[in-house]
Length: 209
Ligand SMILES: C[S@@+](CC[C@H](N)C(=O)[O-])C[C@H]1O[C@@H](n2cnc3c(N)ncnc32)[C@H](O)[C@@H]1O
Image 1: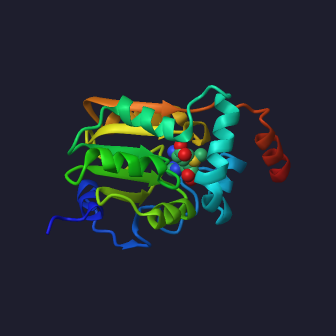
Image 2: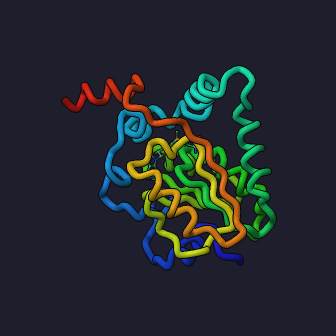
Image 3: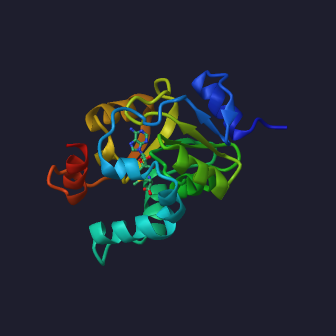
């Protein structure tokens, strides 16, 4: 019987860590991947948000940011998959995968011989991603997106949608993406700006003061 996607992910990471809850957890008892960056990132760790994320939260927020003519969620997934030029047998890393909407599509694109890895820092998001199921080529890991736990040139493609603006050190994260990517591999990014005067950031600052 071929090794499961989770076993292949463990061997790629060179870890024998046990998996509970259907994903590999490299952050142990830490609730947060890296330093906290604000309210939105904290919301992702709640139990409620992952339940409404794919159906309501992400489409509504995406529509507000992309405007009426921007792509739908299905369109975004299609665009990312096409731009990555995924082929059967490829290994693709979906950084800050959330509930796995993109990871599942990538899993279908790379087929049973490929590996689609969803990485996220939030236990609740990953629990929902695992519960959603998907192709056998999909596996999830809890880790920090800024300091990726993978070796040099280990993946053929990297996707990071709707998350870079949440990371404590986005530039370091980009360096990390480039490091793990095989030469000639492809990266797709979708992000918004992190402004100090965003409403969520202002509320967050009030909450901290
Ligand atoms: C808005 S969601 C994006 C999910 C998905 N990529 C999409 O486009 O719908 C952002 C995700 O980034 C994750 N995240 C934020 N900071 C992170 C970090 N430092 N390391 C790993 N994941 C992080 C959150 O837990 C959340 O699931």
